[in-house]
Amino acid sequence: MASLCVLGLGYIGLPVAALAASSGMDVVGVDIDPGIVDTLSQGLMHISEPDLGTLVARVVSERTLRVQTTHTQSDVFLIAVPTPVNHDKTADLSFVESAVRSIVPYLQKGNLVVVESTIPPGTTDGLICSILQECGLRVGIDVFLAYCPERVLPGRILAELVDNDRVVGGVNEESSVMARDFYVRFVRGTVHIDTAITAEMVKLVENAYRDANIAFANEPSLLCDRLVTNVWNVIDIANRHPRVNILSPGPGVGGHCIAVDPWFLVEKAPGITPLIRTARQVNDSMPEHVVRRVEAVVPSGAKVACLGVSYKANVGDTRESPAIEVVELLTKRGYSVLAVDPHVAEHRGVSFASLEEALNWAECVVLLVDHHEFRLVDAAALAARIGASRIIDTRGVWLRRHRSVSDLPWESGSVASKVIVSG
Ligand code: SAJ
Image (cartoon, rainbow, N blue to C red; front, side):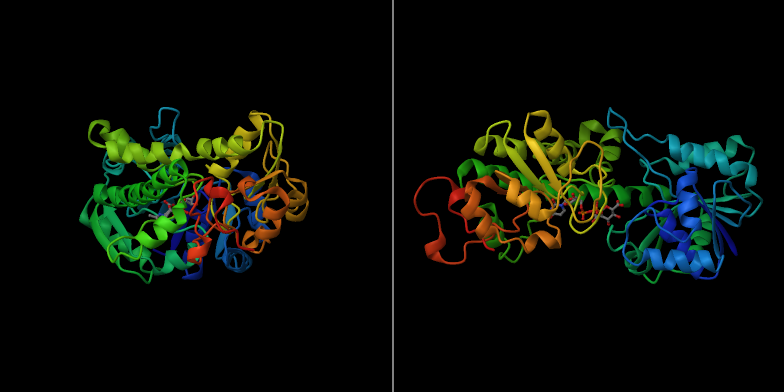
């Protein structure tokens, strides 16, 4: 296994290609987008991820990683293309399917094909295997096939690619063993061998688990808003219980993984997955809830500053971002919206401003992403200017736990005007 061809140079394909190159493999990275290939060839980046730029620049300049729009023969082929979700919430496998077909003319006896793209359970043994077989290859004999899901956290991709455990599921034992031998070149975590369907399930179950846990933070936040109490107090105190660990509520769940993957489980068996489906629905309903909170404090036409548009803290990724959905819904309902995001320079249909400009201009401020920079805002001064009830802190950055008994909102009334706004 001296050479590797990676299909898809996004958040997963690119770091895997770069790590394999730095482990001594001769790597070709293929992307259908010539713009991405151009950028990377110059040692520049089209995505932002800590430390990745330096590693890519090094392996590109050493020519252990070459990027191009065309395939090449190789010992190992790794597929890391996206799996979007269709309107009916089923997996759109068109990119995976065409990537698998595209490598067929380059496959030689003894090659290993590894799929990292997220796919519904059964896709490796079913669709992917049958595409390769249609082309006259004996899978598991002439060529080897394994599924190995990526499970890394954006913002920590390189560290997690190296240190996290992996699961590889081959169509037969030889395929699994070959895939394990490939990953141990750069993975320090344990590489677990299992079947392809187990590896597919592992990935989806992990993300569905996190989605359900986030939904279990979001639903109490809806209740607390209705019952006029501070959800951060409730969760903070509940989490002191030795067997309770509730996650943080927010404006919804974004990113290309957790907001999408649970549907691939529901798709397989809708009748027995009500919990997974409901968690998705709870999390998907959160942007609308944020907008209703704005509508409760300022009328349509008011100036609203939205702090953060990325899908989570300290990253510039806006895929499936609930913050973008809030900005779009507010704009549609006649609000004048300015967005602030130190990690995002532009986004179609969104007007950006500096933090200072937006805060001085706004009649209502909605904090949507807990970027580090927003923690430094003097929220007490902001509350003095626009009124505490017009600060909607969906991440609990400024509106945290009451710090003393006298801070508690003993009288009835809006919790928003009673919670502690810390600068
Ligand atoms: N979020 C909350 N409250 C929380 C935690 C997260 O509202 O307490 C929100 C975030 O703001 C964000 C979304 O959930 O909008 C997802 O963020 P995340 O940090 O939980 O996860 P991702 O999407 O960045 O990465 C996940 C990870 N999966 C798990 O932790 C089980 C990662 O390991 C996967 O590799 C990745 O999905 C993926 O590619 O599937």
